[in-house]
Amino acid sequence: MDNRMENPARTPPARKDLPLYTPPMDVTETNETLFLEFDLPGVRNEDLEITVEKDALTVRGRRHLESPTGLRLALRELGSFDYRRSIRLPADVDRDAISANLASGVLRLALPRRAEARSRRIPVDARAAVA
Image (cartoon, rainbow, N blue to C red):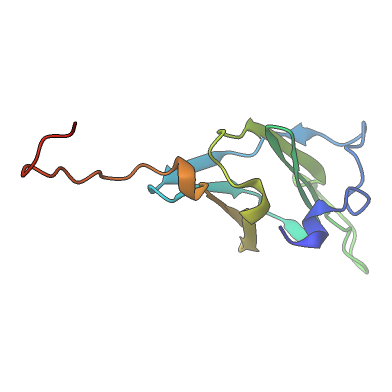
């Protein structure tokens, strides 16, 4: 994984004064890879942290909204908040090969399965009996 995502000092822990949201997630898969997508609108790459510890993958992010300069705020319905979601990793995931991409507020993770854990088809030889 990218070193920026492994550094716990990069994203501060959740603040008690900010709401904490669990981002929605989609999971898709192929025989080789598990794919996760998280909806993280407003989260910048530098405010995102992804960690793997034992059998848990955790996504943490923070959305910052700055007050506009030179304008008087008449109504505020948007705000800053933290995201956090942890999932249990399947045993067949290669933890050292996980990759991540954040674009347009969507975080996409690819979790490759270890080669020895992938299902495979075993050919059957009908010519001779196995002794």
